Amino acid sequence: MTDDDLIFKALADKTRRFLLDLLFQRDGRTLKELESGLAMTRFGVMKHLKILEDAGLVVTRRSGREKLHFLNAVPIRMIHDRWIDKYREREVEALLALKAELENKEDPS
Image 1 (cartoon, rainbow, N blue to C red):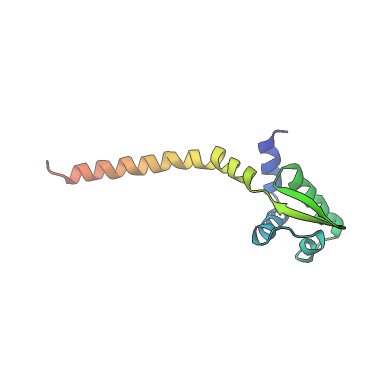
Image 2 (cartoon, rainbow, N blue to C red):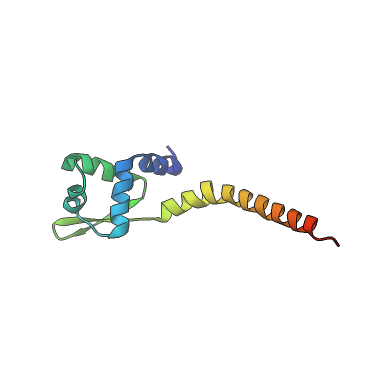
């Protein structure tokens, strides 16, 4: 499985997207903090976090006895640049060309 596949797989699940949103709001959360916002077992949340870690979307750091979870937005940005931005560019170019064509038709000179 490629890195892109791991990221898309991780982002495909609404629970994992919710966890990323929580970390976006405030980084450095413990498992207990993350699981408090979900109606699932601690084990279920850990499985989702493992998939996010495998995709590089979440990184962890030990702080004493606690494990803190942090959002890593770099893979999301790479997906954006590779799969979204370049396709949007074509649409913008088409709109700019249409604008120029319409302005030339209105200009009698």
